Image (tube, rainbow, N blue to C red; front, side):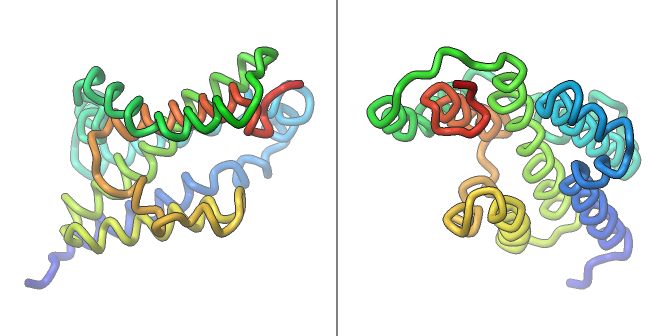
Length: 209
């Protein structure tokens, strides 16, 4: 069945906004104030601003595309789902990696609180909002691309976004583990749990020594 023009508008706008948001760090680096924030204050403080802007752009786009208010847009991206079951899912899903971190590394107690806030809480939420709550949901529900095309397209973008930060191994399963539509808070919580394990065990470069 042919896809109507309105669905293609949703798809094109969503992909454009997604690409802008995903590359927002590099866009903002062209601004003198942002470069100064990076150099003189804190990398993590600047990235917290970037993450906040990413979520705000996604919310504003959902409001515009679907004629929603702020709370309606947040609910559309999964923020209205129960948090409790998601936290349980996150702990179970992340527990094998947390166990490996605990056995293979020393606990780092001298942590930068701003780095922990950025890496373990804000960044995982912003990334899950961008890839799953925003992009996947627009493509699957509104552009009607179908489940697997929406998953695979989101997965390709996820893999491309991470390949430069950690090598080809970060393409694991072509990004399917993040693209599959598990409970919205579940993905964000799992992401945060795994990041917290990496940070406190000293596996991540943002730890302070």
